[in-house]
Length: 324
Image (cartoon, rainbow, N blue to C red):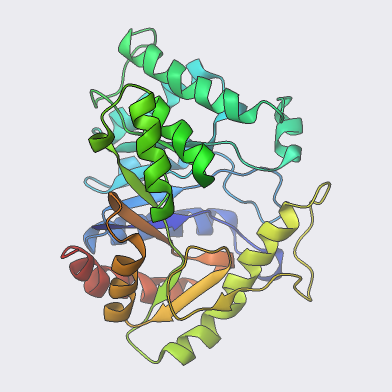
């Protein structure tokens, strides 16, 4: 199994950094991750977050491509209904060319009406639109309707769908499922068969929430909890209709520490590398999960703490996961 990192480039008002410094530091982290053996970096897309949540991941992906040589570069996810398929096909191809064929394109729907209103798109049709975008990307690339085409003969497309219905949709499309949840394997394989694809072609990858430390896990949790709680609460606030504010000083949703990885929102396992590796293996079970990726700097985590985590991920966890 391979390990990736997850970045969103948030910059909370409560401890805001210079934007140029933040973006350049994030690029440096990608270079360092590659040197440490991390296999991939994944970027997310959101709009109108007051903390500046990364709005244009393909632009940042192009910058990563120019600074690195082996690490794969993924989106988890692009909000497909907000994109014109032809424009997305061209921009994704450009990133694939710049990177020498290292793009993994994760597509999803998002969950905020405000983002659809910003782009003038229909929220109710988001799932059908996302399916259509995935199909159109394949057609555009395979028919050379956009030039130049990606370096990869068939660039990986991953569908960021949650729940059994979404997993089945991903299967019908014949694309990868951007989830590490083993409960979705069965409906995903059923969808593959229904879509005329081999169930043996199932491919899954996805995020898990954990923090690895070489020190005392209790001490580590005390240091990182405020940043995970900020992240948890900001997602909770953003999901409320009509909200567009920084999380309140008194958080309405806080992260909680759990003894094992369970895939639940806002629940963080904090432990040493051996325990984390065992928990990942136990959670994914026999599902065809190729890569798991982890938030590297949630909620504006200070740079020195981020690098401490990155170093343990690369030097300790990567070798352990390679044995799974």
